[in-house]
Image 1: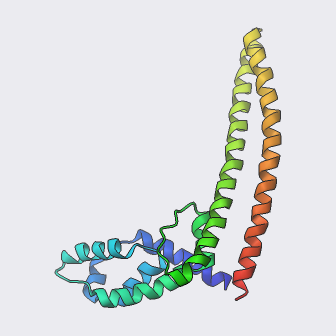
Image 2 (image 1 turned 180 degrees about the vertical axis):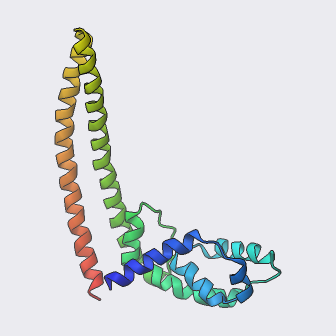
Image 3 (image 1 turned 60 degrees about the vertical axis):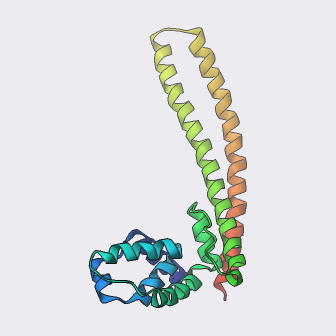
Length: 194
């Protein structure tokens, strides 16, 4: 199941990047194109309109009913709790595409994934702040080697204190991330078992 979800997500990523080709317009397998668009979580009207514009270049009119049939099937695959989790982990917004019967599971996964994404960003922000302070301290030390400066020495001391505070913050943020990662593992296990 896990491998199927990963393959589905990889397919979704590729499909969302590709526009419909001239050959696809001419082949006219609208159900398959709709399926791909649904699996990718594309907005129905906007995506179909893109197909209409693209295929007009080769005098082809897409068949909305066939495309919609495939799209609805693809959306069934997209609107799963694990897909919602992956969307949230990637920091993507919930575009509320899922049918009512599937929305709750997708939304639950999305919210959890988004929380994990935000927590990872908080950890990274603390690491970035620490890195900037360390870089600045290297510059200060080099300048102090050229001659003593009370202002630089005070800045160095303040930076060292700030680094200690950030080290504590980093510990708290990593603990929070670890808890979220446990929640994510439990969530995956719950929905992978089915």
